[in-house]
Image 1: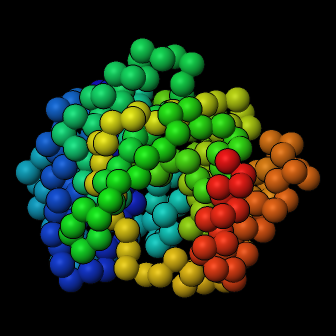
Image 2: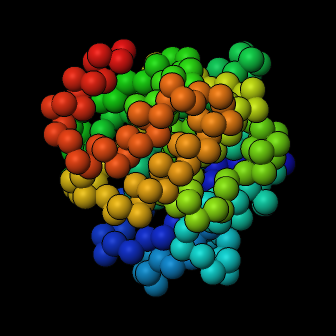
Length: 266
């Protein structure tokens, strides 16, 4: 039985398969070899499915899940979790790259810090296959670090499997669409679990070319509902009310003012 289960929800619709290949290969090339890669693939192109099947035929550590009939990420990740046998759960997306020492360092850290239940890391920001910058995160995020922006990158995380089981995995509520990570992490904090970020850069994170302000209003409303529910559970209201409505406000006010507000808060 592997010590680590890496879970990946795939809905790959691009013609260029290179990002998908690089992502899968970065997991198979990990210094920590005692792992399984569980891929839930529903809705991908035929070529992407063939690509994943080819890797699975070559490496017995790959497990493929199909037939859940959902394109949404929470359902895919929960399907992976139901099959996971590792003590640790690592996240991965289909267009990112994990550095070879990523899981070895993250699990080593968790084993040496039993008071920390999940861990992320700093990242290189990738756009059009080029590094355009780095993103640094607080080493020990508190609930207040969630007010303005999420202090973790979801696919960089490694969790104790037991804590995901304790909160029943990812919420499949419709209001968690595209903010399932925000919901999960705040539920973990509400249950008394804590996360950290390694200050090493162990991950290449792909950001889209889509403008920040172009997110659908329905997705912004989802995040407002999620923020309200989770901040309420954490007894952060009424102080956190301005941050509950932040997803809607951010699409209205100029970026310069938002940066000023963030400097004022911190």
